[in-house]
Image 1 (tube, rainbow, N blue to C red):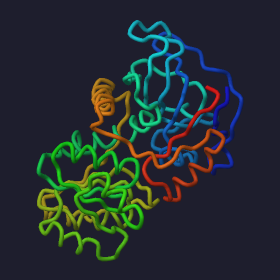
Image 2 (image 1 turned 90 degrees about the vertical axis):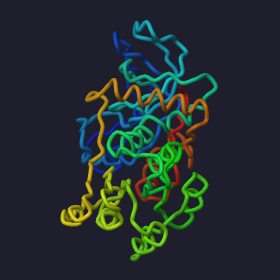
Image 3 (image 1 turned 135 degrees about the vertical axis):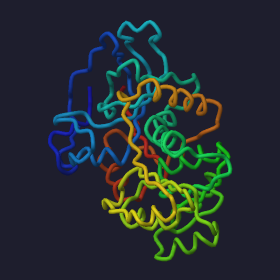
Amino acid sequence: MKAWVVEDFGSLDWLNMRDVPVPVASPRCALVRVRHAGLNFADMISVRGEYQVRNDPPFILGAEIAGEVVDTGGAADLAVGDLVMAQVASGAFAQYCAVDTARLIRISPGTELAYAAAVPVSYTTAAIALFETGGLRAGETVLIHAAAGGTGIAATQLARNAGARVIGGTSGDKVAVATANGANATIDNRSVDWVDRLRDIVPGGVDMVLDPVGGETTLQSVRALAWRGRLLIVGFASGAIPAIQANRLLVKAASAHGVFWKFDADPLGITAIQRDLARALSDGSIRPHIGGTVPFADLKEGLAELEAGRSIGKLVLTVEGS
């Protein structure tokens, strides 16, 4: 089969399409024909060898798939032909992927697999951030940075579904996307005075900030918090890891929380969240914004676009020949 292999840590020069053996199903591990795979900023960090959980090269890149079961590995609760989605430790950018059956989430027949491939990472991260970590309640106001990105769009939909007010932090042509996705208002979080402008919209500050950007955006977000506000640190897309001024948290009785999840740390909890998301996808309660589909041969170009911040919504790899 064809697969995209990270042969050493560094730049995209070390990511190459190779012919590799098709994985073999085994007890507790099913074989999935990959139809689509989600691209994530973490993929680029993994290529550089800087992600929190490292795979040793060589390894097949990619963490988010949707496809169909071609070998159940003997699992009694699976059938050949079942449509599934999953977050995997690695191996998504390939024609076939062997997946721990505990990670597989069935999706309803008729569900577009490109949309399903956009759910396991971005929507799970958003759900854990907003509800498990942040304790978001109906009526609260949440500022979501990178509101036109994959996680930002997911968080906006989930927060609105929960009855929260959403302020989308974004700029340029991405503003229209954030508004169409359900943001009640938007703020240009690249302007130098964006916190002051935010206070015109929410005079007392926001109850929660979801921040996948890092750097100066994080530091200014602390200023934007209301009394007992919560800052949710999801990532550092800017490349800068900030040193938060703890005194600003203290005087607001505010808190900062790191958002990070691993399937193996809470398999039952993650599975429950993802099953809920699969149902929401099926009934239309959530709908990923696919900003572009990337041909299998053009993965490097897709990752470069994602890293440069040019993409809107979710980029999804289309896996041909599987």
